[in-house]
Length: 205
Image (tube, rainbow, N blue to C red; front, side, top):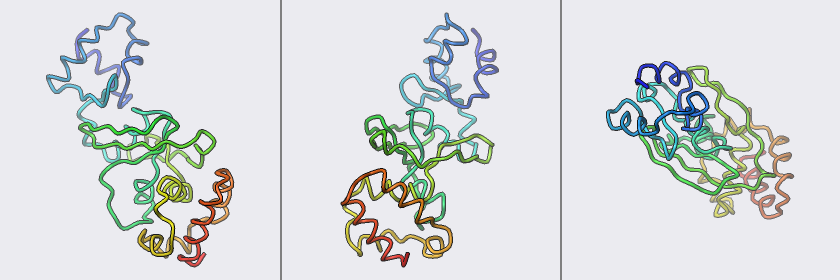
């Protein structure tokens, strides 16, 4: 198969797996992928996952990559908090939550961190449309914050909560405490409940 035919078929997908290629062309020669990567025509994202280098110029495409190279997962934690403007820091890595084991991948699109949660806690996410109109699974603001406290138990006192430097205007005007409480109930964790109470006290909620 020539590369132009392959690109015409696969390019609209953005990123893809070898299994998706084989669904289209069952006798596809996998060695083509290695050769095309060596020539710079493709980018290897992780084992069996690839993308076209042109997508490096597409804003927010790394978030789309995050969803697809390790699924099921959704963007959460610091990446989501930064997306919503809840923390002042610009987050370089893409952080996600998954029911799979904790993992990290580095490729031409960035560094991708995934942290494990129980299947019963894999909730509180929705589809966000990026600038190229692709849908990405994103934690809601409340779930992103709860994921952070759930996965990082060193946030445990008032000073720790202050050190998060959450945007106070956002917390007062847009943050949904009832939604947070609904997610918290799903965890069944009294320890996490105590930490959440401290956070709400610090931010006057």
